[in-house]
Image 1 (tube, rainbow, N blue to C red):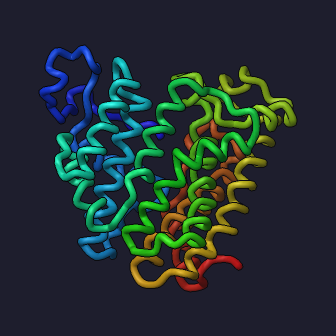
Image 2 (image 1 turned 60 degrees about the vertical axis):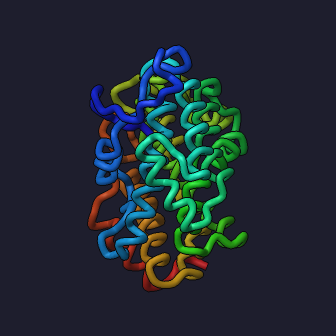
Length: 303
């Protein structure tokens, strides 16, 4: 996920790095990170959720976006910045984090019992982004999503004390689907700005899509066919995973229904745009998101 932040949005002074030789760049302030929540495909922490739950979801969101910033946007040595972030995550689990956002996270991690290895996976995914820029097939992409997306859902289930094995498996399908949809939204940006292509190479070859097609002002017929294929696959994964909503009650059901609804609304937005993410930004409509949210909350997903 791309996170746009002001150049002066820095925080987290650290005595171990005063000389700047261990890492370059720094981290954005908490307010700069949290201000991005309104641009998400789904409500991160709806106002109807209790304050304590919202606080935990805000803390998780701040960490997720901070990791993305370190891996995608930070100037200088991103690998060093990711390593420092992992060090401070370890400190957070000892109650001694130095980065403000990690200090907020340490409270959530302790109170919700979120395993440290779940959050470390997100840092590992961003390290992978520094070296891996193409994915041979969908299985490879799903393996990446197991670190870049699925831990998000697992952490959220911990907030609601429902991180059970079967429910986490359903959450993984939802999170991978949401990641695939986001990759489809950001095709041009990922390729042109950071030379990354998350469309599986096997699928590109099948549809006759070349990398040059990603530079055009409008998607070719072949690319639109490929995007539709990926979006339809993500929609099926969302439908399969939406069974999770029916297994939850109360605030957990409200929140997870919102995440799934945002994905389904995004898939609908692709259809409305002719599956062309190059000609215009594809974003879910609020009305469609609310409609999907209400349906999921009442019916509990598709079995």
